[in-house]
Amino acid sequence: MSQEKTLSQKEIDALLAILPSDGAPLPNAQPDQFIANAKAYDFRSPDKFSKEQIRTLQMIHENFSRRLTSSLSAFLRSTVSVSLVHVEQGSFVDFLQNIPSPSPTTVFRFEPLPGRVMLALDTDTAAIAIDRLMGGLGHPISDEHQITDIDQKLLEGVIDYIAEAIAEAWSNVISISVKTVETTLNPEFAQVALPSDAAVFIGFEMRIRELTGMMSICIPYSVLKPIVSELSPHTWVAGETRDAGIYRETLEAHVRRTEVDVRTLLGEADVNFEEILQLQTGDVLVLDTHVQRTLPIMVGEDKRFSGRPGTIGYQLAVQIVDVLEVKNSG
Image (cartoon, rainbow, N blue to C red; front, side, top):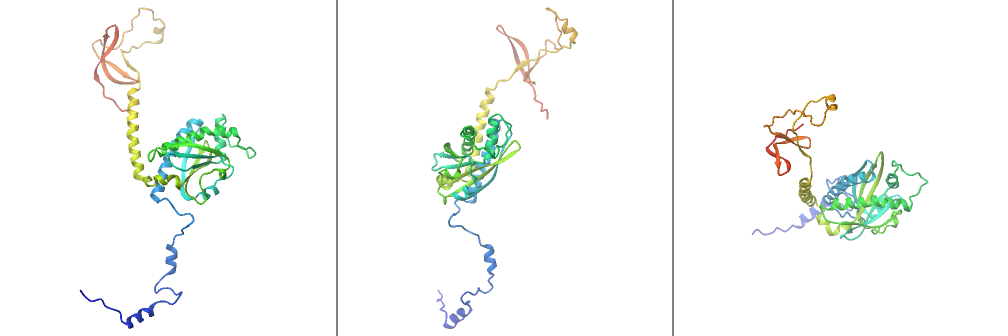
């Protein structure tokens, strides 16, 4: 083994000579380069969710948007479109600062997860929904009108559909029961989290008829902490695949129980209207079908089988002798 070389005093002095004096830049260094690559970081509100987890939350709430669009359109008997706008993270106070007051606000519990979740609607969106529920065309309220206790009671139906859509959207990750804890018109009175607590904000655009409003959901990090490891696209895809299999089995079961009209076409005859008016009891119409030929059996409006007529006991019957090829109309 070679012996380690020790620096001489001359070599040490040479190294010290090239070091910069206090405050001087390093040789060949470009300070602007370090500044350009620097990234601001707020130690008071550190990021809690990774990019992958934020992407999973985005997928969950895109699914929520589709479900809510369908259910609210039926409930309000109007064209409703809900679309995801953004998914961001920050402190709870950041969320409150972007919610105007008054705003119809609901506090949920995602059982069995801990903590509380906040949902906020803007007043125009709430007013349009209330107007539709009252039988109106869906107009926003005037500036002088304030949302009353009766209006809030009517909104409970909308909130129930939102809660149901949330639970269905999260089912691919975790089975939750969304329960309403309280409602208020002042978001600052809603007890959800401390101002400095980390949270994720989900914003939606709600279009009812031709009018557009906003809906926001705030989920504190403490609520999702027990399942944060499950917030991955792989978990989501696995849940989608599992649900697809369940939906397929359910759909097949419904199809098997579906009743359809089945009839046998005995034949056809060309008769004008005058002949029909002159028909009497005992008259005979000659059909275009030979007695030895098979008859088409109709399922709905399509010819699906051919068969021969007959009887079983005292009842008329038809025996299927062939399955006809189904022709695609496209």
